[in-house]
Image (cartoon, rainbow, N blue to C red; front, side):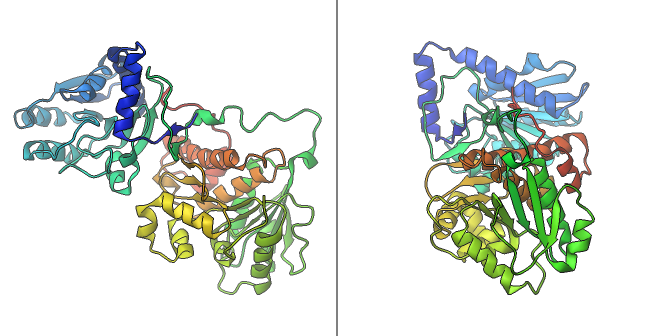
Amino acid sequence: MPLPVISVTRMRAWEKATWAAGQTEQEVIRQVGHAVARVALRLTRPGDLILILAGRGNNGEDARAALNHLPARQVEMLGISDPARDLQDLEAMLSRHPALVIDGLFGIGLNRPLGQEWISFINRINSAGVKVLAVDVPSGLDPETGAAAGAAVQAAVTLAVGAPKFGMLAPSAWPYVGRLEVASDVGLLHCPETSDLEWTEPGDFAGFPPPRAAATHKGTYGHLAVLAGSLGFHGAAVLAARAAQRAQPGLITLHALPSVYLVVASQLQAVMVRPWEDQADLPGSFDAVLVGPGLAAPEMPEALKVRTRDLWQHAPVPVIADASALDWLPSGPVPEKALRVITPHPGEAARLLAISTPEVQADRPAALRNLSRKMGNTWVVLKGHQTLVGRSTGKIFINPSGNPHLAQGGSGDVLSGFIAGLLSQPELQPDPLTALRYAVWQHGASADHLQDNRSNWIVENLLEILGSTAPMDITS
């Protein structure tokens, strides 16, 4: 189940309800320690030195609980109570070049600015250039606001306990939180809290897409039309089409501008490729339409823009708009029950809303809501760090997968193609939210798998494994 994003107050209430039900604090700490150790093992190799920095509170206890669950690693622990006195011990340990520091100095209970001694201590950790795993929250970060209390540990990975806290998702927190992961199964009661913001768990997709019945054929799984590719941007059409194939719809027809038809067609086999014609029969017999990847040449046919607007306003089938096509869409209502999806990055979202990119990033959920309202309550996939999926009402889902190496040309074309390949399948259309969340998670999880195994992967490699990542909890 997805996890609500909650406040510190609600987290405390959740803990209190757990203790009242008979669960012990010590047992939860034990399980948190196991979860911390699992992530630490993933971030290191046998023989590596791990330094645990444990403060005096429960956060320190969580870090200490990992100590005996780190096989084949050298582990040293420093109990920190007086940062001025303990700085010398920190220097000595850092001189041994640990592969990982586990930050258990302060938890979510920190409610005051740090003194200069603590600021100096934390700054020394940050200046060491060592990978840091923060337990629950980076020490010094306000989990409500995302602001640093004078200084905050700059973690590579933060393992939140139970559920994410609001401040961890604020753009101001990103340099400190790093990659946010959640240890959700640590002995607490089932979370009683609710929120309009929910954190996607990989296990949400167990059994999705559903198994296919034996007595089916390609006509069962939909026919996708893709309008993509222009002079100088033909690669986007190829990437989108191949990504759609990974979702395994029954048929795909790609309409490319005549100027790139030959080069696009020569790179595709199972995908049918046709040169774009003004009188193209769309939507016709197609079950979904994707428009936008690679349609960025300076002079685009006006008929293509008109057809895009017509599809958006009238087509009874799902329409997915990406990239340049976003600028051609009309605002306002779309047919009732019509499935519409836009996939903007922050810059495109800013352009559609007539605001700046920093304004979009400052409140991404609000930007998503406003985009959806403007475009007729469309589904919005707001790309970027912690991609959001939602619309003008209802819950917004935050994606946990992916890494900065997705910042390559063509990555967005792959995502839009995979989304369209899923939504062209009639069996998946009744639940577009799950399909969208799954596509976004698979896209990021595939990139994570590649990054774990090679440092120089490219977008074409992403296509090779897209859709094959097992939906399992990375902290289990």
